[in-house]
Image 1: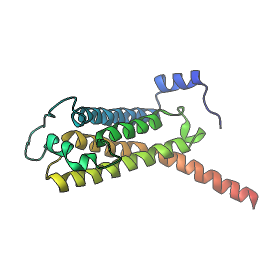
Image 2: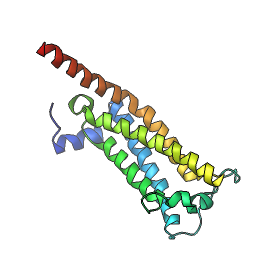
Image 3: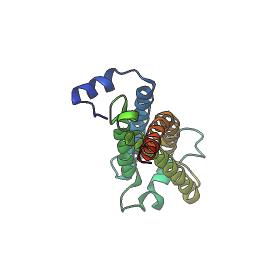
Length: 179
């Protein structure tokens, strides 16, 4: 198991065309989309802008109400969208980490990425429930990030499965070699 050199990593990530790399690029893009949604909401939550426009139907979405509510400021004494930016940034970093064959060479990377996409989705769904319970409205920006999180879980699954099979296969092979 070798880690690719920086030169090889650059070439693989930029020019590789495997299905795993394609899915990772999508996950990375969706994660950066999530950071963008968090950045937009952060601008409002920190007073840089004074209004977040909502898409129709207006009755379901009210970003100004949701993102100014106590719900949005109750974690770590900071606006929740700033935490969203950091969290999706970490997911993007995990999607970009490792070479084209990382499922075999560094299987913990795809497993960590897959776990993080599940965490992102579970967190987004829970926060959406809290948004609705407290405000009877949703933040469209946050809900778009939720959809991106769900798509990322689906996209991560094949590489995570391949990495897990390699990890468990190795452990079983090592255990049977000791016996």
